[in-house]
Length: 438
Image 1 (cartoon, one colour):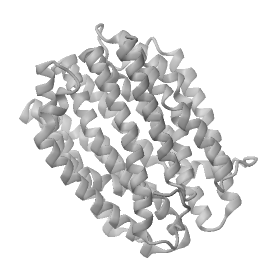
Image 2 (cartoon, rainbow, N blue to C red):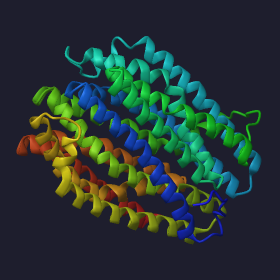
Image 3 (cartoon, rainbow, N blue to C red):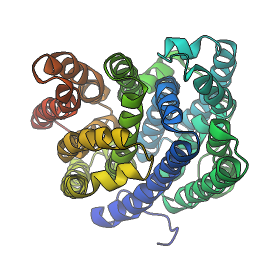
Image 4 (cartoon, rainbow, N blue to C red):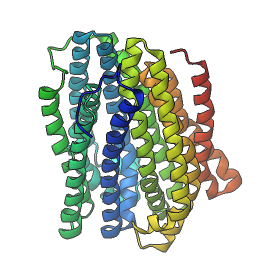
């Protein structure tokens, strides 16, 4: 697939979708694959306690990531809309303000996280057996926080300029770096969980440097002297609030899940949950990559006033994700045991991870539709609907299911809460689509 510029307002919708979806899914999968290999190395060389430690640390990472996504997606959406309306000076100012705000925020995250590091593991629910593992993992991840937070937004702006292929190549390079470093630092040198954290951090260096060079030399985006307007920045954050809600609420729900599992099952339950999450992440990444593929096309055509093309992008992504959801369901039904066994040798953990994956597979049928809906409403600058969808599936309905279903179904109710949340959210999304007036 050539790295040619696409005309988001005139080229065929299917052509644009394929040119964005294929690189988007491949890029997200490459990142996901690297994270999964992290998990495999941790499970094999550190043990189930290492997997539990990473899963306990992850909610904090997701909260910081959610704020980064809010600024990045909100800023790129408004900048793309401005460019579609041929307001180029405004678009460049939004680009500049977005990148500057993210840089400042990422440094604050680094300093605050390191200063509170000794207290964080206990707050996250770690017991004495894994407290030090959580602390050692987060200490290194926080050092690379600025790169993580800026790279995703660089990707969005490059895609918004009509060049979807280059970011994927850089993500692949980062993923290869991650895998090589996992093999060297964890597998060969025995750096354990610190090695896995370093591998994850080093994976962001090449994408960050190369994409910033590409933005400066190969795109129409220009860093200018920023004009900071509080109301415009607030609108930017409000527009990206659904992504913040989605990421942060996932972090909160994972945190609560971890507390429940530590109380009811122990560290082995958290480890099994993390394995099921790694397996499910592969499909979630595909759904998100497909949904993200319509972001630039929808926002540009929204700015240009072409409602027919906006709906065309939306419908294509929905039906594509329905197909992926059915494939995910079938694969997990047949191969969930083998997938879990890749991570650990512990028969008890494998059996529990397989059980979780069985119920989670039903939620995957619906998940792609809900992710597409949230991304679509963000792209057409209707963040309230997007936030409600994200909050419903990632937190509110998930926790309602978590607290109610186990009362009647025991531990099985914990795993069915995912299906409950996606089902209720789908009903909300369909109602929003019916009332939508683009």
